[in-house]
Amino acid sequence: MAKGMAALVLGALLLAGGAGTHAAIISVDALAGGGIDASGEVTAGTSFSVDVLLSEVTDLAGFQFDLLYDATRLTATGISSGGLFDPDTFLVNSAIVAGSASFAEITLAATGLDFLSPLQIATITFQALAAGEVPLTLSGVVLSDSLAGDIPVGLVNASIRVMPSAAPAPGTLLLLSIGAFGLGRARRARTRCGGLGHDAGYLLDGRSLVRAADPTGARP
Image (tube, rainbow, N blue to C red; front, side):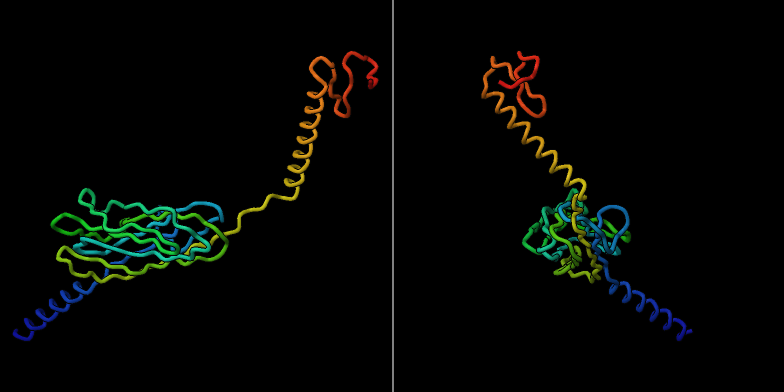
């Protein structure tokens, strides 16, 4: 009986220890909205958003993170809060420098949050600059509980593939060139007509200026 009781107590202690060391998860969603995407594809010259999410956390009272990226291929244009701690949110840091976006918030409430499913903590908006594969790497991540203690956390990074912007088809370029040439000729012709004066009675027949008063079309 004593051995059985000792085994039960030991098992309870092991379970409690395992719960205390369980790590939360912070993830990068390469394409904001829907499920968590480990990778995504965008076109150079376009804007897109990336979500940062937290899951499997107990007594969360604050967080901070940096998201690192290749500044030659992407530029971060904005960071917005996921509103996780609303209405008790206190913004600690929101900053963008070349190659890094940093964000931190705490709650002013007396207790932290418990949740298992992924919840959005921030959204970062980017402009795609140049083609190539771009890792989105979490760094400097800190989670804290309501007693200012650290919460263990695992990181899940992502990547974005920037595709070259589509070049106009050769036929399209030819049509644009012809149109520009024709527009230039028409403008020059209108200028010549204007130079003759309103009462001169000259009309444009597509090739030359013809005096409207002369039915034969003979040039003066």
